[in-house]
Structure formats: C-alpha cells, structure tokens
Length: 340
Image 1: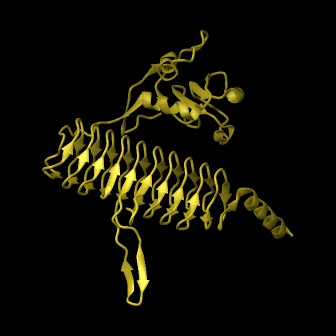
Image 2 (image 1 turned 180 degrees about the vertical axis):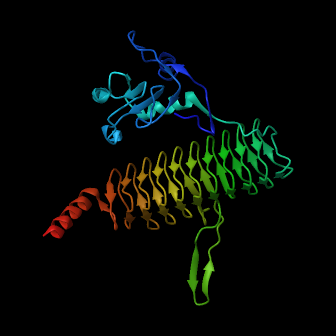
Image 3 (image 1 turned 90 degrees about the horizontal axis):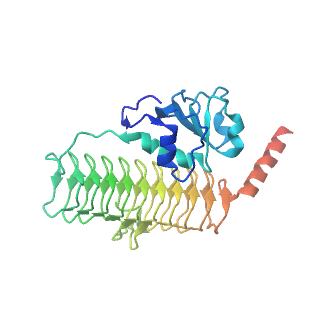
C-alpha cells in the first residue's frame, strides 16, 4: 500500500510478528515463509510486499493475478491463492484485518500540543478531563463536562450543560446541544445533535410549534457519520443505544429510540417516535414512518419504505416494505410478465 498522507506506517513487520501481535493464540506454522511485510492493501492492489485478506470469493472481482505476500483467508478459499502468497487461515478475515491495519497505521499528529487552544472560546466553568484537547475555533459554553482523552475539533460548538464521556472524538464543524454522550463515542464532521425536531400542531391560526424539552442520549461506543442530524426529544429523550453505528446523512427525528448494536446506512430517514430494537440493520435511503416499532434483529433492505411495525427477526424490502420473500417473488413475477 502506498504511504497514506494522513497516516504513519509503523512497519515493516515479519509475518510471524504480525501473527504474534494480532493473533497471539494462533500457532505460527514452522514451515512458514516469514516474509517482511511493508503494508496492508486490497487483494486487487496488493504488491509483493503487502498483506491482504479474502473472506468471500466474490470480492476477487475478476482478479486473476494475486501479487500479495500474504493473505488472511478462510479455509474454503485457500485454493484461489497462488503459490507466491502465504495463506493465513482465520475464521473472519475482514474482522482480523482491522487489527492488522491498526498495527501498521496510526493517524499523523496535527501538531497542536496545547490542551485548550488560545483561538477557542471556553466558558470559565468548563470541567475538562485529563489529556483532552479543545482545538482552534471551538466554542464551549457554560456548564459543559468533558471526560478524559477526548478531543473537540475546530469550529465545533458545544452547547450549555452538554456532557461528554471519556475517549470521545468530536469532529470539526459540529453542533452539540441538549445532549449526553457516553464513552468511546465518535462524532464525524458536520454532525448536528440536539436541535428541535419537526413538531407542530395545526389549528385555525396555522402551525403552532411544539416545545422540545427532551434530550439526546448517545450511549457508549456509538459512531455517528458526517452530516447526520439527531433531533432532541419533545417530551421524551431521543436515545441511540450502545454500540450502534450510523452512516453519513442520516436523519433521526425527535423521540426516536434505537437499541444496541444497530447499523444504519446513509440517507436513511427515521420519523418521530419510532422505536427500533437491538441488532437492527437498515439499508441506505430507507424511510420509516412515525410511531412505528421495529423489533430485534430486523433487516431492512435499501430503499425500503416502512409503513407498518415489524416484528423481531424479520427481513423486509420494497416500498411499501414487505417480507423479503414476498418482495422477491413479486419482482420475479413482474419480470416474467414483462418478457411476454
């Protein structure tokens, strides 16, 4: 892999060193060709000095000449590797390569050494943890608490009485208000958290704005992608459960509750007061109607329009969304009719 301009390469490492550091419980074969590895790359672009990974034959994408020095791979795919590639058999190559990447690469320091930049505005009553940085242009208002080992990047505004846990990374140009963030939370640039939701009552005199007095609660180990918006609750709180990952450009409306370890892809819109269970996966550009309940372990296909509640362990697709089997059957039927 070419040296990334935003990351420092800690290599090179011998294959045996990589295994000892990343897979300490896996025995290094005695006959292994202990090559020197200089970087990590995709199987399409890997050179004879790189390590790569393959967990699905479809990811080859027509690649016929694999040049990598070594490859993390499952047992059933070893036969696709040429003799020049050292196979490293693991149960989940994609999961393991993450640790290999972390071994090789780390972000380059931005050169800012001060804890609180002179070019930021910080209220006098800020409670700031150890080894936490406030970057140039940030605005921290009264009553804010920020834990240890956190970072507030440039031009981000933290509203009054916001609480942020330990090891939090808040990107540039964000606004956080009326919210509580747990530990190990990552907020990417441009995110908006805690603003009023879209709530109005219609009467003879027109629209009357519904007051918002709730908060946004973001639990531990949550990651929020760039330019996503999360509205505060009107009377209840908006809650994002532990371990949930939200992509870029997602709209989460007021009073929504999302369970643990959910994955929400880009351009999803979740209307007000929707309740989502644990381990739910929502494909890109899907929409969920207000006040609907989504059970645990549900999978929603990309572009779906969810008009009704979905019970646990269901897979749905289409607009309006229905069970995946029904959706696929309808598509096949339409295709047959179109061919006549």
